[in-house]
Length: 323
Ligand code: DGY
Image (tube, rainbow, N blue to C red):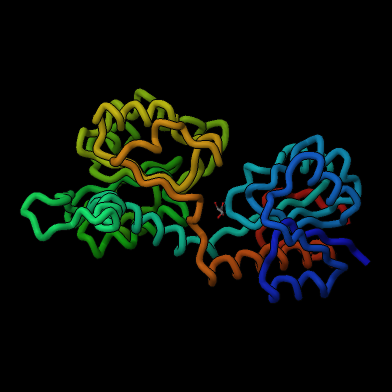
């Protein structure tokens, strides 16, 4: 019987998939497993269904000698030492696609929330400051008809782009490679270099994976290129932005605002950001809808079930097979 460890509560449907191939243990506590506690739990397991906040390091992989597959419940997998897993023949899988729409929806909530100062206005009402309609109360910026910049035109970036049609936006995108011409036409999006995108767009949203190339993709110099009335939105991974530089730009009013769902040193946040009005801060909830989290867990579970029964994983990140 294979032993499978799940690092957080998941849907019954996903648990049942795992139970069809092995004996399942679930970490039911709210506290996130990491370091020695995580190692202790997974060192004798054949499979682990992990979350994006479980850091599966080389050290852990070295000691988890029975581990055959890690089904990471997330499209991002920067929490796992992939090179180490590959070297040890451990299959790593992720959960792409099933979270595109939820993440794109949240990105739009942030674009609109930022532009129309929704959070600030909500606080104002709750604090009892609303004394009646005023001509200058919470004036924001238009989204309709403005220019949207998408950094990373993969599955999530494309879903964000499709939603921009309803807002009649001109879309510029920057990606490793341009999309095929038909796709560009379908999305009504133009491929540009990063500098052009930063200089011209009103709303700039990031949808690229975190890797060595993308670390601090938006640093001080890039922020400096943005327009004074432009907004930056990040629902991908925190380290793509130099958070300290962003804080300084926001504080000095060098850009209009930012909306962040992810942070450079998550869950820590550059302290000054908390005191600023021109930033919306969310606790990494891009994919957090009931439907999406269920689909993610099911996909992660199916990946594990496939690998343990000697089949190809559905969405592999690595190729090593230990079975
Ligand atoms: C992902 O899938 O990488 C998300 O950040 C987790 O919700």
